[in-house]
Image 1 (cartoon, rainbow, N blue to C red):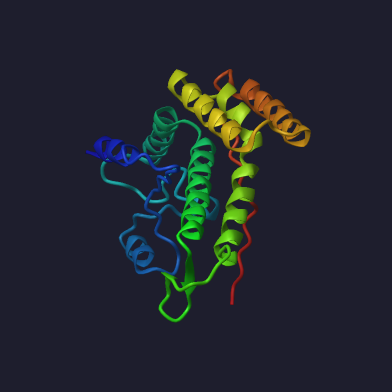
Image 2 (cartoon, rainbow, N blue to C red):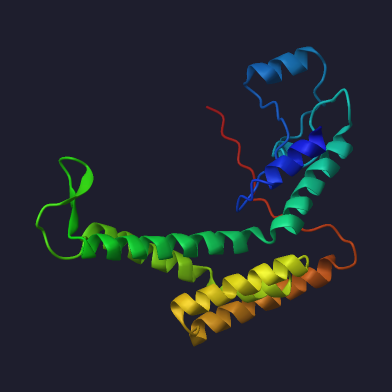
Amino acid sequence: ALEEDIEWAIGLNADLHQFMQLVPLPGTPLYDRYRAEGKLEDPVPYTRMSGQDRLIFRHPHFDADEAAAITRRAFRRKYEAGGPGVLNMAATTLTGYERARADLRARTDAGLSWNPDTLRYERNGASGEDSFFARRVEELHTRAREFIPILWPARLFAPNRAARRKAAAVQARYRRVFGPFDRTTQLKSAFLTASAAVEHARTAGGRRELIRQPPMRRIVY
């Protein structure tokens, strides 16, 4: 049933997924109950309270290491089925920009403008472009272009043929919308490709990926 739930979630085709384990956090009723029942590890390791590693309590059906393996398999399965998450984000952002640009053009052609009293677009005789919505289109344009440097490394280091085809299609869409990539963007892409090559070589021998977490800071009031 657990594997079926994971496949169902992956089937939603979301850009990203966050598979999390149940974590009884200090200060919650669940934490107090698990401690009273003797289910928690002692001492409780704060660095493992991310929900992404081994469990911090004793589960009746699988141990902490098995839970970690299940979580990692879920992320790997999503990666193989949907390709790199950052590539999916790039495609969605580009779609949003294209749609917003088309909406702005359509509203301008129809003579519609925003009415702050009715909170809707209306044909009220006003002419000219909607400056507020035009600004949103500009912001989406900037956000979409920020993804361009990742397109080539995402394609080169994709986990399988389907993901590489997907990356190639997204890359072609970006070129159609924005034209040839400038020199600065190409240099950024080359740097990311080199960084990805180093990481790929480091993990090619079966070594576990390096998960970089920010340092923990605990503040007591």
